[in-house]
Length: 421
Picture 1: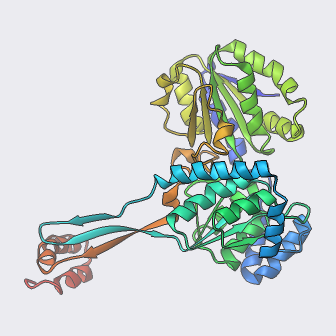
Picture 2: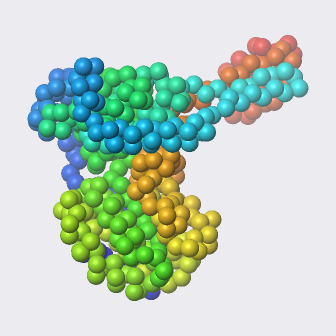
Picture 3: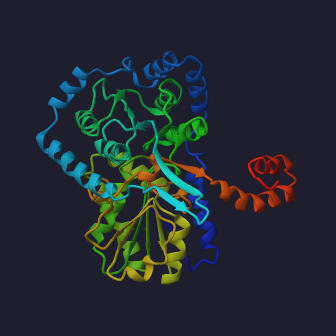
């Protein structure tokens, strides 16, 4: 079921890259319709959104009312409500520590340079239909940053609102909830609601739509696509923990990816031997099985250096270092969204209530981007105020550079403020 790449093979790096590229290229799923959907919504606005909702989800209701939302919340199981409250508290506390500080610099000429953090005004959040945890992860940073208006787009399930998502939205101070999904939800946020930025995880269609609207609205600095995990384990790691983490990630969707990296052949064999049995009674067995068959991978390394090289090439969304001697790897790993350290830190827990954010770079974007954090919801604006003496001192050198770059209009503009021209 799961492909194996042995690092004894001299061209193992190429094999890994080729394997990853099949999924990252997007050729597995035809997303060409996304461009058509967005173009239509940009021109025909809500009429087009409703057309695609009827076509793909048989949904005829985009707007929600306070009465409908409150009625949905009343159906929420008290245990789920408490779990959302618990997660909210931890996520809020951790993300509050990320608040950006304004910077002020004053030089000896009394020139003042400031760097001001200004919240984004309107943020759109995409939330899959049954995932209140995703709403918390996106809306809480918005709330802390001071975003004035938060609009959530989330699909209905069989025509109904998800009580957990509705409760989480109310707790986070969401301004408006629209019920649509897929690429049409992104189009709605971008071209109908005209938000300034869109965040939130989604399938390949959602990820493609966010990439296409970028530039007209903002999106995260990474691709929040189908989820990924890399588990690093040794001969002492509990087999059940390895299997459970790989299967947990695979049940997210057909395009999710689970990878095991190890030096131990026996562990590799045991995973291959037992994973089908582990899947046997899983409610989402078909999804997890297809995910593992198409995108599951075991990389058998020869030494620690190879393990580090492989992880940095994989650049996974989530990394589990499920071994006791994790320190020899930790300080050498640079390309990863989050790292869960030790046997008591399953990645699945970080999806809910450890306090860290589960919106992280997928499809290799962890090589250059951080996961979702408070900075995503601020714009940083420079304020420059030069003194009478300051423009004389700075201007002398600035005009030299302007003339050197053959931008004489710049030079004249600077000299117009100087006494000694």
